[in-house]
Image 1 (cartoon, rainbow, N blue to C red):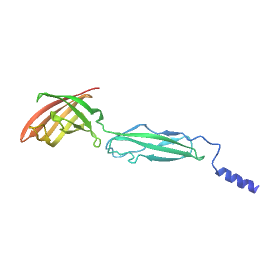
Image 2 (image 1 turned 90 degrees about the vertical axis):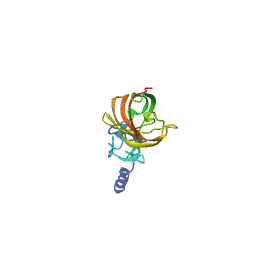
Image 3 (image 1 turned 135 degrees about the horizontal axis):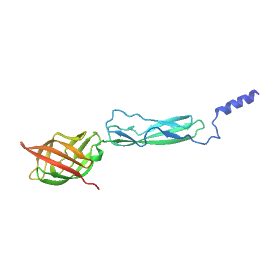
Image 4 (image 1 turned 60 degrees about the horizontal axis):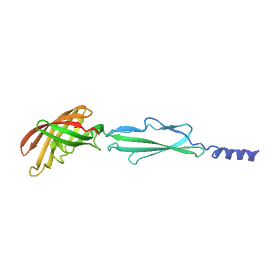
Length: 209
C-alpha cells in the first residue's frame, strides 16, 4: 500500500499526457491598438486565458516607441500545466493625430497670384506637426507647421539658400492658418528676404486619388 501511494504521488505531479489542447488566449482591449505619438505612457491591456496557464510576454524592442510613429507588436505565450502552449499577437500603432493631412495639394496664392502643387508630410516624431515641400512655391522649401485644434501655426523659421538662380536667398517665414475641412486649409504667411517683407495667402486643396 505504501508503494502504491508513492506511485500515485508521482503520477499526480507529472504532466497530463491526455491533455493536448492548448489554452485559448483572449486579448483584452483593441487589436490593433492605436496610441497617439508622444503619449507620456503606454499600458498593455493584457490577455486572459480559458484555463490556468503561465503567460509570458514578448514585445518589440521599443515596446512600443511612443516617440516615433510605426507599427509595433506584442506577443503573448500561454503554457498550461500539461505543457501545451499557444500564442497571440497584439499590434500597436503609434500615430500622428495630423496623419490625415499628409498628401499632395493644389495651392492657390491669391495675394502673390501663384498656383502650384505642394506635398505635405506628417512628422514621425512630433505629434500634430506637418511640413511642406515647396512652401510659397519655392522648390525644396521645407517649412513646418503645428496643428492646434482647427488652427495652423507656422513658427518663425529661417531657411537658407531658398529659390532658383538668380533669386536664391535666405528667407524667413511665419504665419497662421485655419482648417476648413478634411481636404482644405489656408495659411496667411509673411516672408522676410534681405530686409524686405511680403505677405502671401495660400489656399490648399487636397488632391484626392
